[in-house]
Image 1 (cartoon, rainbow, N blue to C red):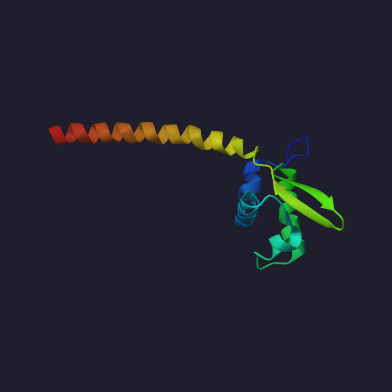
Image 2 (cartoon, rainbow, N blue to C red):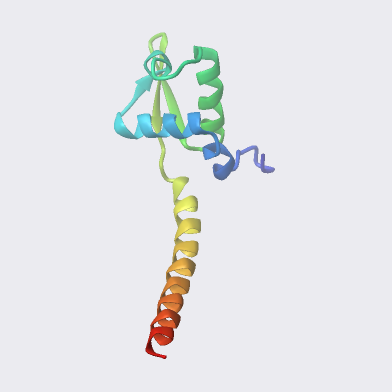
Length: 109
């Protein structure tokens, strides 16, 4: 974790279970733990640990409603990943254009 006790967003989304939790929360406004757990073949404690990792990365927020805790997605930290992917997308687009030009030049010979 970083010095301000926040988990790295890339680390948080590295696990497929956490990516699925993000997807589920993106499709719903808020979900309680028992509804999230129903989507996995693991117990509430395991799902709760994954949610904690996502919370530490700022990707998930929670609020208490009576005895229940509702979880919701905070997608803004995903912007860091989008920016990183966009950089490499430009890199590959440029390289594919260069490859296309080389292939066209090769065909003309």
